[in-house]
Length: 411
Picture 1: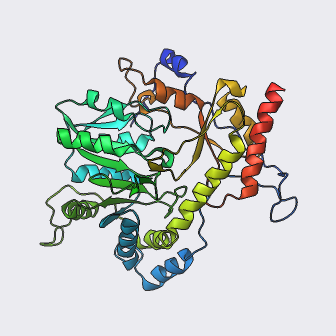
Picture 2: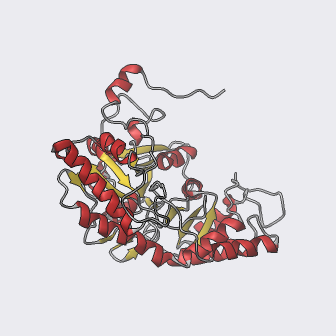
Picture 3: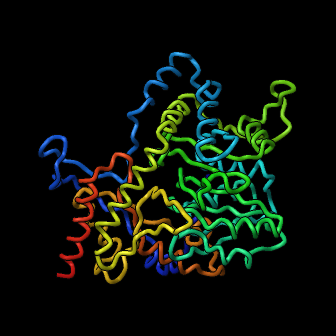
């Protein structure tokens, strides 16, 4: 039986000041804002999908056609539409974002003995996808403004075993890609984008997802474009797309059925999921603008609240604000976790920032260097409700609750 990886008690005591506490229980409230029915009790979730376009119509068509697995027309149409929306010629739909990233790495031939540079401040799936190939993830600290990997630290982490770099466009803000791509060209490396959170983001007016040799997107329910579960590899390389499609489907051969030249995977997306994804992609610009409009209002209302560091948008970037994150500084007067508890009592759901990879029990190495920027983000960061169904009066209520929490503490 597989056993859990647990850190020693002395290590856990040391990490207590960094890692978040338990999730605060949400209390259903009667907000002081209009709702559909006066007096209705409600919670404001971190993210809800918006599925009021052609989603139901397309799913119904898929069901009526009988093509409900991976062979229906919606898979192909979704791949073509989404790839085009992010500036690519090819899309390879997958079961989820993690399988998309693993599929991209496997297609590139990453394996045991290889090293892949990744940020330590990222969701665990980025590191796991590297580990699935047998390769070793080599961690890079974050930089303090965009919260992406610190590009200036990449070159010093290269070794003769380095095969490539996985960049993560954190919370929807693009990585500064030109120096990453220049380094990769100089050293003979590939660059893969983990664009799970960056649907519609742009770097110097080029779409994220089209900047490296390949990219991996997630379509989980909280993403800007969703299929419930799902993912996609995007690329402009025809051979990479061909091999990725082969590996995704058990590596079945064109020569004869049940004949295999590779170790393949069952990473297929169903026609039902793709039907939802196609309908969502038809509204790509609208769904992205909804996130950006919410972020503009959050920034307008929170910029004068002392003790908060708000997300940035660099001049060379289009941030899609997958989640509106902020840092709770000492000057706020409450800790990040204390603020979360106060918001939860008012029915406002929040999430803490990622716990960095180097602090995770399955990757922890007591002898490894520490990553101070990533640790500060972990200790201070949270993100607010940011979904497609969020309303202006929700945002005003949330910002008022944040301001009042500070006033109650410091008044």
